[in-house]
Length: 445
Image (tube, rainbow, N blue to C red; front, top):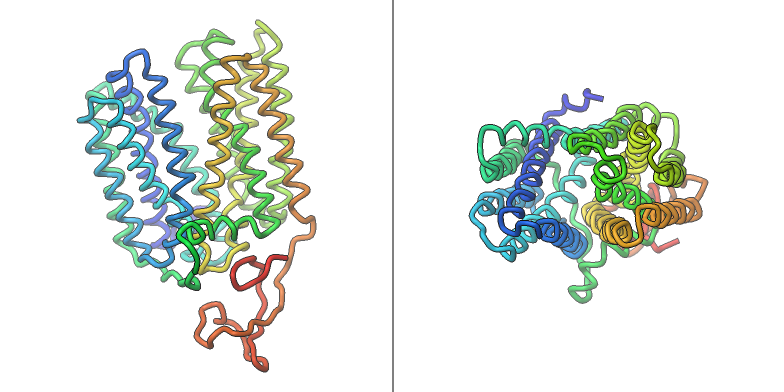
């Protein structure tokens, strides 16, 4: 897996991603402490609103950014987003009003909505071989999981030496280091897509329409909903299970979250070899259909009352959630790369970023509000049914026969059009073959 790090460009990009993730983790800890300083007992409400603002920024802005991203220099876009994020992090220690927190969080997450899809769309151009790209996806999944384990521990160590507001300096340093690493490499040139006519709304939603045109990507949206149901259960209700249901210590909250990350990491390490022999469809649908079974186990654990076995059972359940989610999430980039031509790739990654976070925007309040009002068992049943329906929907939407390259002709495209790079002239048109991509050049099937 580590062989892909021999590629200098990818090595710098991966290092930039890892450092920025650590900085973001430090900001998460510091933001909670800042909210408590400003709002006291209402800190939970402030953080919940900040989380909602984050999701709204992701859902609303990513498609608009994706609509113009292919017309902007990639390196400038990535570095600009990092600089905005660093500036916001440096400003956060000086706020003393809740509304200021909300404004700065919106700016921070807007910059992330610009950075993340562009970054993920660059990687398949840096590593064009599918075997290398698969290993890069696993490394990226590991980076996210390790950050969830490492950042809280690092924050705890730093807080023993300094006040929490200094953690924002670490966040800014992470984003600045990311910008330097991006500047240090030459990125592959982005192919420009055909100019999009129509209103600003039509241009902004072009990536989403492209995303929803193919059956595999419509299935991916259902898979995202299944993952969001499981992830929201873990993120929102871990503290409730550990502290209230099981009467464990605060330190055990981190242990439970670590079990989730551990399950995800194990799968991320194993998947590169598995995907050499098994199709993405088999792996991803298998992970989605495993989630309702894990929810059923969680329902039994929740109903068991004061049984002593519930603590190790919770750790195993959280690890199973992490493993199943990783089965869906790790190969996602492969599916997106095959489903869109290079010139449309950033728009499709932006659409995936927006739509997947839209799923989280639905499941976060379902996990939190339903759990608080009707009890954990009701939340488990509702989210489990959501995961089951989404998984079955994905099975129905995703054709069982993986489509191969489709030979076809284009008429009306000029000889220098980037899509015709591998085409041959036939009569009045051009003929070539590739995996089907439903876009402006290819009608929806």
